[in-house]
Image (cartoon, rainbow over all chains, first blue to last red; front, side, top):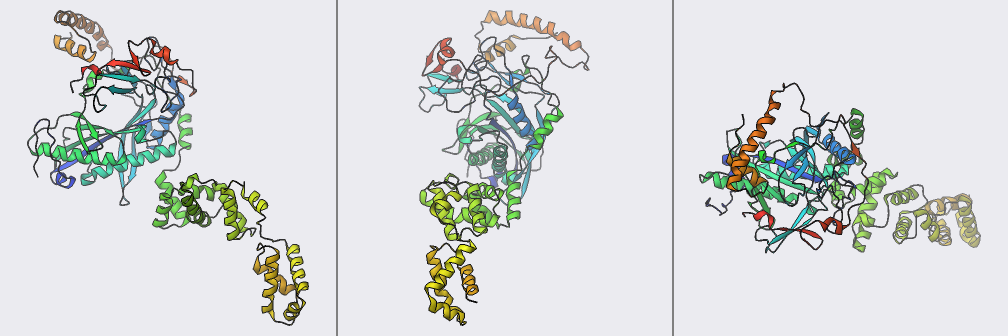
Length: 506
Length: 98
């Protein structure tokens, strides 16, 4: 294996194991999340993905002279909620700042962001790893800012900037609320660094999804990760020069990008080269990175307080109200459910993989015992979904309806066999379970007087058999039970009919 | 006393994507130097005075998350030197060195 460090030629990457024989990796992850508020951060334009170009724009998000921003209260609430979910402090007084740079996707020529006083800071996220252990990732800060417009580069072969003749700008995304979540340097992960990076972004995505504050779709750009990577020689503690890799658009890419950069850095350093601090662009196809556009140095952004927006001082009441609404963390919920329902690891994994966990949980919340609820979703309903070629959650039956069927079986109105027919009826659009029972005449005949009358009728129709039973030949009762079951079209409880036959012949 | 050099001005001009002539580098460095000198008076203020970015004593001015009308697209694009496919058309991005 050779490491080449000629200009413009990629070094052959070392494996992570080889890298970690000589270096300790340090990572910093910056995740941008687009909030799913109704409107943008600083104006009332719709925050919508996929609209016709430049249809959700106004003087504020186009940066027209004289336009004044106004802060979206719901976005601030989401920012605080995210901070609380990440165990952060909420700043008593925070404000907005202008980050100045000239680029066509930012028509004001500055981005409204937060600088020295981000809304939330000093938190952590305990991230579950594949082996069942937990890695604590410390959160430095999360701050509010606005997204940029989208550029379409025309004339270049690849759609990238290089070689483009001109660019077309759509400002629908300009001003969409963004939360940037920044970790402290992640040190000590060693060969697990790529895995820790992926696990962190996965856990963050799950938490944010649970909060309902963002679509967290990496493929649509509503969640984006920048991965900072550097290496320091083993046994030292001064961080090396870092690179920042952008365009990391999937969880798998987070892991691959970190792994690639670790290998590339090692290649450069071991061949006597130096790492240039730069932004790099991840290529999904090749799994490699290449230098991105040269960016301003930090001082060049000339941050200064945004004079058009007054500071934020979230009241303790507001913060505590938001804290009280925090949902359980997804993995904690899974662990709790596993214990409460007495599931094996495999049973839990099957439920999660079948997309059935929420459905079963909702069925249990609607009153069904966990075992019965789980059984319906993973067996009969899973079969029906499979036959229909749809995902389980897309089946035309609700958890409440399944719970009702379970209840009907438990109270003896339905046998399991009849219950399946009721479910078929619900899936066929015949209405609620009770309506299907009535419509198809499926209820177990449990009316004692009706059953007794049917037994008496059968005994009268077969006097010889009745006589045998009265003489003590109880086995003969089977013929009468059969007649009653036939008369009730199978909807009587056979055991109860047997008891009634013997009672009437006493 | 600040010390704005021609190089500082050239750097600022590049950040602002402005073309500046050689003569202007001299003129602007003198002028900006004088401006920075004047503004540096704020350095005399004691540290225990909090910085003032806002003169209106307001906090928590928040807008409800309710949609308001956007501009018609024709109006949005009306001021653009060039537009194409409903988008603003701009020159090849800033003569990127890439």
